[in-house]
Length: 224
Image 1 (cartoon, rainbow, N blue to C red):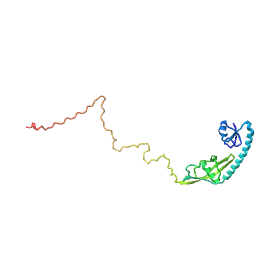
Image 2: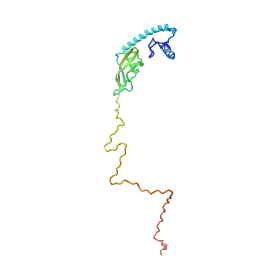
Image 3: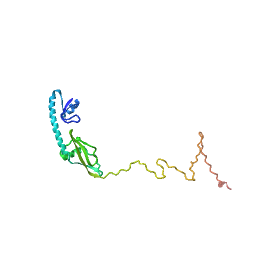
Image 4: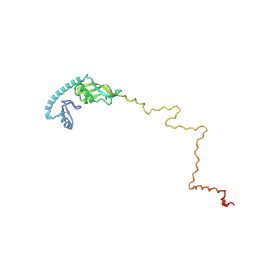
């Protein structure tokens, strides 16, 4: 389905252009939101008139945004953020923060989605971002991140764990038991003697208790 774009829509095209899109996308999204108008064979004359109006509107919008870009360019933009003593931020700077600071400095509202950072901003200092105000109007934003709320520097990381320790001279290598050397002249301990086990089927009777010894003295009744 062919539609006439009433606004710049990436990546479809610019305001005033006629592009072809899926019918469902046009009827359910673009047209209800006033972003595009349907193009029919019978309405080609009307479309030509709308295109002429939109082209004039697009040029005025480009000129307006060019003035915004000139107003922003050269302004000092600074963002305060909590950081450590080494200058590392607790988190990173977002497009919302930068857009808010640009508006505070210049009075111009900036869409945060049109800000593109070179990399994640996680340290204090000077950084850059690209502001895409218009397909024909791009400006480089230079901003400074200033630290506040300094906290003590994190402790220095210890040496990596698992480093091999150097054994002392004469000490056994780790993982191997120390060899025991018997002293000179002292025989090694022998296992205690144990009785031979009884053969299979042999019953060992307990030893009989010894009878008490008879007294050598006789009772007095037997003595004359």
